[in-house]
Length: 159
Image 1 (tube, one colour):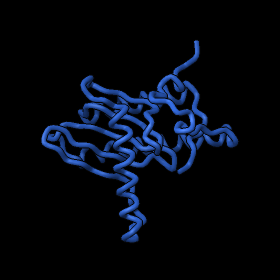
Image 2 (cartoon, rainbow, N blue to C red):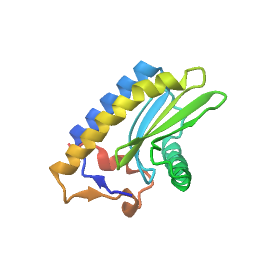
Image 3 (cartoon, one colour):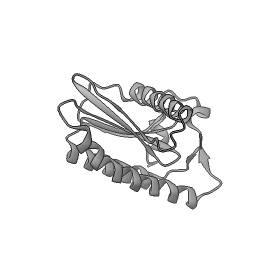
Image 4 (tube, rainbow, N blue to C red):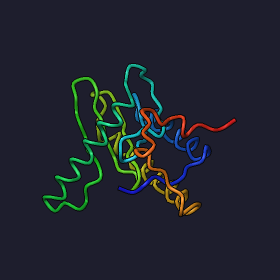
């Protein structure tokens, strides 16, 4: 698992814009970016009843378990997990080597439409993370080493 590149407030602001746009285009309820350890980096939500911190952690575990299964069956093209529910569905998609994007949407919305809009966002976010890594190649952030229950303050702009 690669450590997260050092992110600036501008990076998070751009991520938030991408997530807001994605929510509008897909009529999704929530979208979040988590590091591969499951820590929420940023999120946008239309539904306040979701515990996004817990969802991020569990979504990461789900993705990593499915990635391991794909590896066991020699499937190298694995990059997303789809979970369909009665009320809500969820798509988890890799964002480069560093993060995952989790999109929660009503079960009445087709996963194909959500995936259609989510994949280009994941590619743009991957480029942003790669640029952050290139900006400071020696600097990285391992949120699990910080031992924070809620790392959202790490990504807030200092005033």
